[in-house]
Length: 433
Picture 1 (cartoon, rainbow, N blue to C red):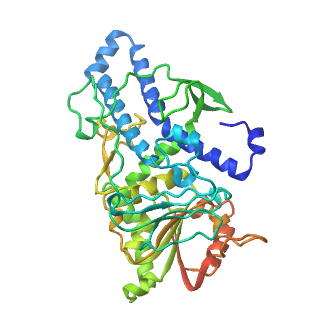
Picture 2 (cartoon, helix red, strand yellow):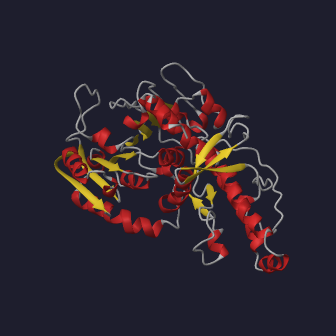
């Protein structure tokens, strides 16, 4: 974390890059942070009298610690894949390349990446002159036509063909010392010793920050450089894992049916009796899109849709699931392992979740589909003098909000913006607060 006085001297673009590095730090240090938290449980276990250790061993506590470690390793492997191409936001800064995987080669002004693997094209453009939170358009489903951002941000294009196979790190041996009943998804995860001394707690303003003293190769900090990952940053990352359950798993279907289906049914009711071609011309906006399942469902019904999201945790994850997934249930995560509290059984704690439950590339080819990164009020609000962004007022046939309105600092301003965005006879459909 940077000192507030230092941050006050940075430009908007520098602050944006600093925030983005913080997000990447959280992804990069998930493994070390989580293993250390689990190691503290083991340390507490060994501080007990031997008789009490024996009793807990008979209940499977020590074995459960090992099983949680395995699942942390599996989560870390998945999260590393999510940020394998973070240059969709950052432009391939050299220090970020060293910290998170193999990014694309840096160029001046814009970074353009184009892959023909598997027949699918991935394009990314990054304007270094514009802060990302002022409006960055991320994955775009289109029919290979060029689509450009008019909001001063960055635009990303994809086609509907089959995505390339994601890069997969070579399997490493698993040295599990507990149960021999290892799920197939855990068979090739790394199983390093507990890092008792890897993290050192340090408190700032009542919160706890973890300092890492040594790098972990290209996915960690440079040797001799201390990186800091806050509890709050890691909470956001753990929350993102749970969001995958709601938006992209079979287990999340009941919640999606309760929240998304009423919205989609109201949308269909308002635009009833439209042909497929007429539906494609209906422009739907979804602010606070999270991991983008609701916009995906809108597109599946034939409408053109744009999602808007502020969180880089969500944007990186939604880009990954939409653009770098080639089969149903391709990935396995363990979102419930980070707390032993409020769990009825060990099975609940260790439960695996497979994602996605659908193949995102199966969405219809006709409707447009895009995500825009940034603050809802700044991107879609009334333009100020000298603002070169394209006005959004009166452009949208429908605005769909699902548990989004309560994020407003000024709810009246949200309502005014939504009203101004809608075309005559347009509709706002809301679920939640």
